[in-house]
Amino acid sequence: MRPGSTRGTRPHRHRSDAPRVKSDRGSAGGKVSEQDHDPALMLGSETRAAEAVTVLWVLSTLATFASLIGTLTFAMINAFLEKQEETSSALEMLPQWFIMVGAITGFCGLLANFLTTRLRNHQAPYVVKLLSGMVCGLGLAVGLFVK
Image (cartoon, rainbow, N blue to C red; front, side, top):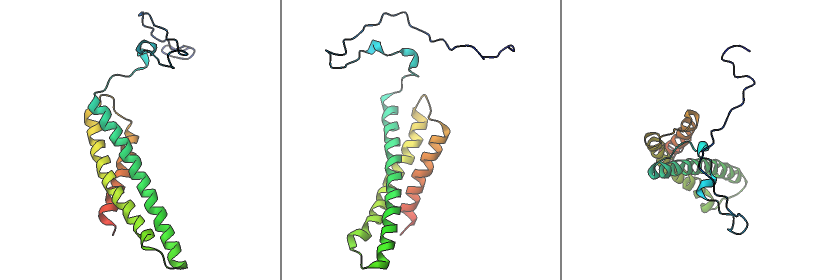
């Protein structure tokens, strides 16, 4: 092996010397005590504000993506049914409703993306932030510029 090569080496886990308390999972209803978790696996603690904004960011991104899919789906259904027969006004309103929801959640997602970048100690991967920004930006742009 060359000097500095990591081939054949095994990663060693750092074990804390603190005694662990085993919990009786059968009688305690499956509750796990705080000492059962390996502290070496935890990346670090985040503030409650950072965790709250991260949850808002993820849920807003998912809601924006779902509303974009809903807009596309009901627009295609309306286009197909328009050729066949007279469509109901409720079915014609669904794409506009999804566009409105996408614009609101897209704005919230972009704002939460910015706040998450500022508040978190451990950042999300760049690709995740970029993809979220693109989805939320598309939802906001469709809501602002599509009739």
